[in-house]
Length: 140
Image 1 (tube, rainbow, N blue to C red):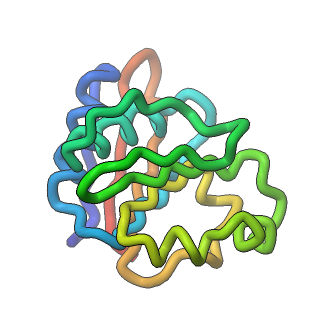
Image 2: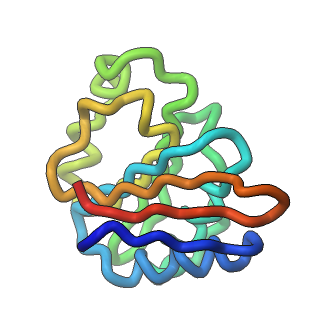
């Protein structure tokens, strides 16, 4: 996949872009989400869940570190905001999640840059003002 730049004008469009990606993800895929507070990382992850065919209310896992959404291909939604080191991520079972044949969506990926294998989908979200967002999607 070449780098793809997408402009969304509201939360619904950001969710739709997540859904589009979710429809092509395979079990074991990782989606590393980058961007500051309020740029739409959780909205994008809601779309991933829809694309994976999950009937789930996706919310930010800031205080739980990871939310699990079961389905044919489960979604493991991580929030690294409170993680200080990559070792902490391994302490909560990162390797185990990778082995469970689900999709891992990781918010605040910039905090754990060394944990993503090649083939990881990278989504960088940026607020362009108001409700407009730039999404840069690529595979590393």
